[in-house]
Image 1 (cartoon, helix red, strand yellow):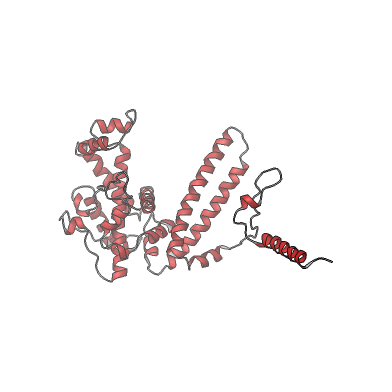
Image 2 (tube, one colour):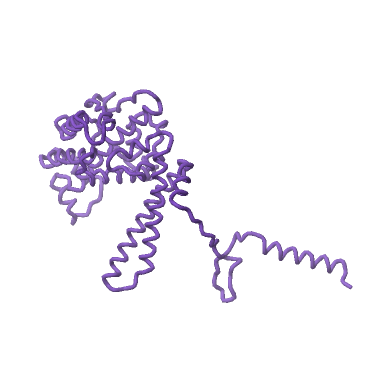
Length: 346
């Protein structure tokens, strides 16, 4: 007959073994080591989540700003991976190497992109401020960029459009000194870069606004560049940055002119800042119920005159006489005859 102490030890041993089986694996590298010394990771939950596009759109209506921000980030990350996969497939195909796994991965990433885009499409149509739908009326702005702007621009913290420009890294005077905190939001800066490049691509669309602004501003910048007006900025670029002497950029800067890529960036940035000015003014009116304050360079430095951009956005997209006239006036100013009027320098 077993003693009481023996039975107690058996119960304790049984309880300990039971607890070991039931407790969560907080250290899988310790709990899943096989006899040959290799690490065995715990099996993943294989439960498949199946959602239709209708389900995704319904889920999108309850997204928070933080969740939208995360989805936008992931969309562009997956897009980059998918493009890399496509490049890999193209390279492997040329050498007749097998690439089915990479090709499959690229297609799966495309599905993820499409699903996220569908959710952001719904979100920007139903979110309460109305700025998502407003932005999407602009040629070149789709659901992803529109959602990104909503998730990264808080109009309650932006008393002027200058605050948005600075936050988006579009202030040419801002310098990120070594050891200091980045003076802009990297996520919003990338988003504005993508918006600007989108405007460049749609410049031939009959309903486009900001692509045509880019073209007019680029023509103006090229004229200033070839006439030597920007020679000082070229010299400053060489002084402040390390540029390889064997590059075309160095050759251009050393002769007192900005290279084509720099001119492109200046014109793109100008168009983007003008778009953000329109975005700010509309968001300010909707939130505060009042007219927005003028940019600092107009209200305090008295550089140029304010351009009311509402007529460009409020008119019928097919183009009314008022809209066309306003666009022509704007492009004349952007092209340099009254270049400071827009007060959004490059």
